[in-house]
Length: 118
Image 1 (cartoon, rainbow, N blue to C red):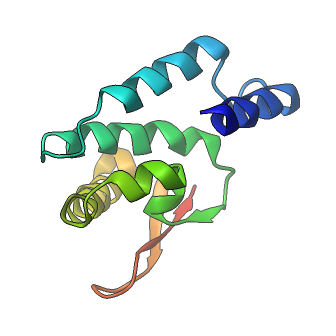
Image 2 (image 1 turned 180 degrees about the horizontal axis):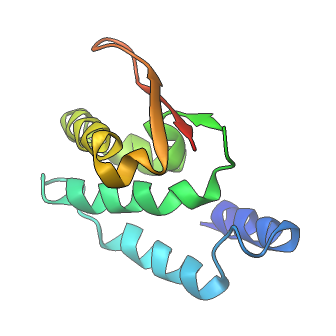
């Protein structure tokens, strides 16, 4: 949790509009703490967390879905739920709302999909 605090603090000094305030940071941490990674009901919540990270990316920046989560959070998600989350995120990227924000660059069933922020 300390690394997360440092990340937001440094980011707020550089560009206050792109990164969450301390109040928003606390809300994000509470959301993360409240997620149960043992059930499929957590996948829609994880999708919302991934969508919430999109404004933090720069225009034209490419990313993987796993880049939208901190490493320790991504590793806590069971593999079957990560696959389902990937499917949900791809569906979001193909939706009308998602096409305004991101674009799918490449990927196959065997390799992770690469996205780019518009």
